[in-house]
Image (tube, rainbow, N blue to C red; front, side):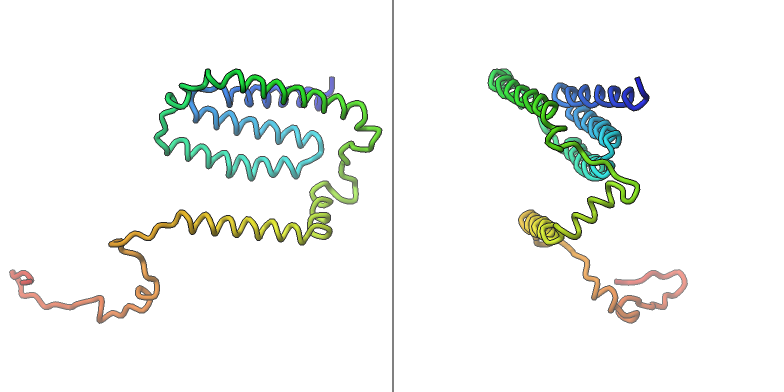
Length: 204
């Protein structure tokens, strides 16, 4: 067995075990930490497949932003998770049926790809000596799909502005910083020189 095969089995085992612990851990903070571990292991699997761009996305976007955000939200919110788990047994049969259907679909897709994937030319194309995988994706993304890429960025910008507008609350009787007043403040309006005799204080 080669070193790459050993690394694949180790990281695949860690990914599956971490994914299982995400949904079985009683502590939500531990669930988020196991999710981060699963993302890291999946990123290692993508590196073994030659898709280092997807591995970078998993680490930078999901681990560095989404999972850490989940962790902070879970730690900051005072949520009573015991009440949330009270109806777990009632939905267990439906969840089991859905999980069984998803597992059946995944097995069918795996056999279909194994039988016809190579013949149909659906194997992932590895990078060549002339251009790496990331460079190839960048060329396609910024040439053939540049308008769609800009449109996606515009949609995300509108969504971000909408979220800020909906959640921003202007409270009254709150002192706010005014940069123009601070910059335009003069010395005569800010400093008062008072001559005080020795042994006497300032009378208001």
